[in-house]
Amino acid sequence: ASAYHLHYGANLMSFSVLPEDNSVTNLLSDMDISCIFGEGTSACYNEANGWMGNISDIQPNNGYWILTTQDQILPVVGDDHIINSFNLNYGANLISYSCNQSGNLNELITNESIIKIIGEGVAAIRNASGWAGSLGALDPGSGYWFISDAETQLSYDCPEQSYEDSRE
Image (tube, rainbow, N blue to C red):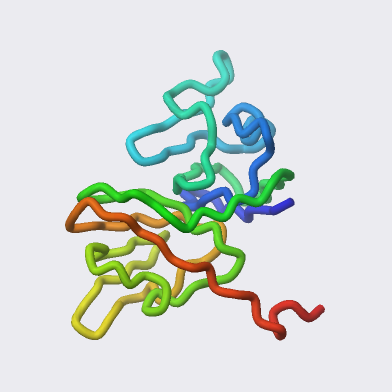
């Protein structure tokens, strides 16, 4: 189970926990969510017709913009999906970060074809000494725009949970 904290407006996020029925209708219909946008896809809610658009299912490897009209918590019960390998296109790719722990960019993203990463209100650019900018780590449940200068395979190992992190 997971709980996604949504704030008023646009939320850039990903879903690592999904039920077997991962349809937009099943996951988002009981919430105050007006639209969901993915990379080149979207669906919006209309009182008369329900969800309309070309996103029918939410996938654990994709990032999404979720538009809400109020702060709320989106509870999701289902299986945990850790996705840490992606086929990236040249240009912008909206992908998920589904690891259970935050991951430092300089340790996690070593593929030099990735030249920029943009999150919600944060960004990083690769320079000669590594990553620079306001984005220093990838966070669980967040979505990110990965900008690549070539078609490439992105793979990384999820950070392990330390003993201190696991204590109650």
